[in-house]
Length: 288
Image (tube, rainbow, N blue to C red; front, side, top):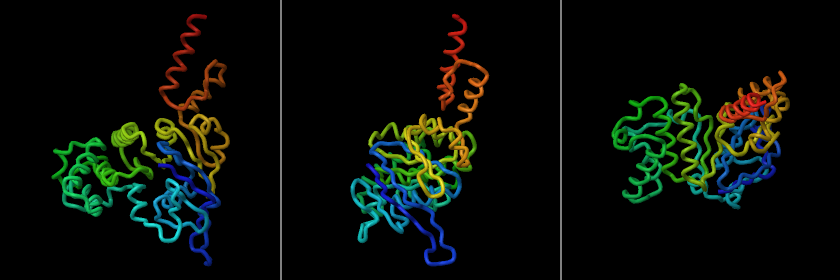
């Protein structure tokens, strides 16, 4: 599912002393099947932007098109929009409330007036998609699970609605390293399982963005400052640092090696790429 944002502006508390322009003439396009990384310093407009993409916020001006339908127009059926565009907020496990994992994941599909068979099918599929054992967790209270498992249950609740666009706002916030790896692994698996699903990942971790996404949108002071592939964006180290951002640590490491005269490609953004580049350098020097 494609997303097109045209000249989007959002002003909080207009006509008051607390007036603040959070988004300023933002335009971009996300193609069907893209995995987008949305990055920016705190206060850059990321959270305000994603809340427009499923109609939680209305633009002050501008338009948002989901598969050519303007969801910002008057009279649009927001329930239908939110079926297509699933939004997972930070710490979504805080919104769990049912007695069992099954009931929590089934809550959304039940509100769609689906048959019991279809609800059961969706719940089982969603729980397994996030890497949990359906038979083990279905009758357990979500509050008996670990933090990472609870977060996966919350994500399963969104997936059970079968959205065509999935927006994840800092999905690993507050998790330990194991929980982070589990969540990111399941997100990557999900993307690879559903080629037509469009994912937008908001993250402060340049390492996570570098590993997962195929395009990056950089927000700064309410505007789109940069957009492009991870290689294109992370090549602009000085520009990113001016905006209070950075690049993956491995990129800094490779740049430091090159500055010491090593004949290596420093346009490297993942540990795997760095490993290959260093091995290539060592082999070439061994054979020299």
